[in-house]
Image 1 (cartoon, one colour):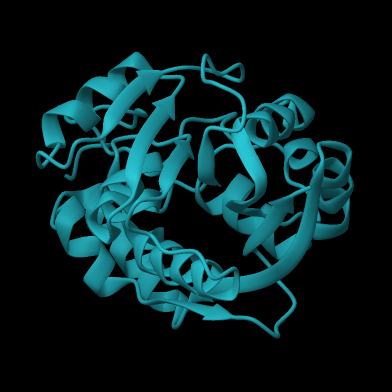
Image 2 (tube, rainbow, N blue to C red):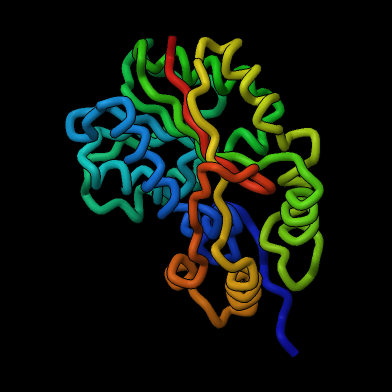
Length: 251
């Protein structure tokens, strides 16, 4: 009989749902960042970028590959250690830091908030600190989870409760911490960030996500195989039923 997989965040020896999410979201995150940079006439080479909620550093390494000078911050010391182990000599600075950032005011051109807004109890603190370290007219980019019947089924049900697809520790997500775009826009505005865009994204075929999740749980798929199996696509004009990307500009 197959054994029940060990699930844990920031663990190289377990099924780590946060890392799975980072790997499968990487392509749309990078596509969206490049779109934002183009809309704001910002060049990646020479820009300073901060990743809040950087996990094992997948997104940070992607931004460094574009030419950004990157700082990667995460509240988990284990995640920071795994990120350093996976570093490709790209010159990224890794920090273990929670909501409050020991970084200078107006010292970044781009801040990307990943795997944070849908789990934090203090969105105001996260956004205020992100705005503080962002230069005027700098870009705050994020992705998060909407609060809809479908998102509750996926994030609270499939990813946390259902035996065949569970990849997250119970309690990682809660309905009160999933925020609709209009609710998040209010938080952004209070932090001094002017919202500019919301874009839905999702798997091209939801069945591929289910198959990949089940295969990773059973141990027949590796983390590295997941991005090729789960083809995420951005739908700029669609209503975000589960996940969405967005950006705002520091006033």
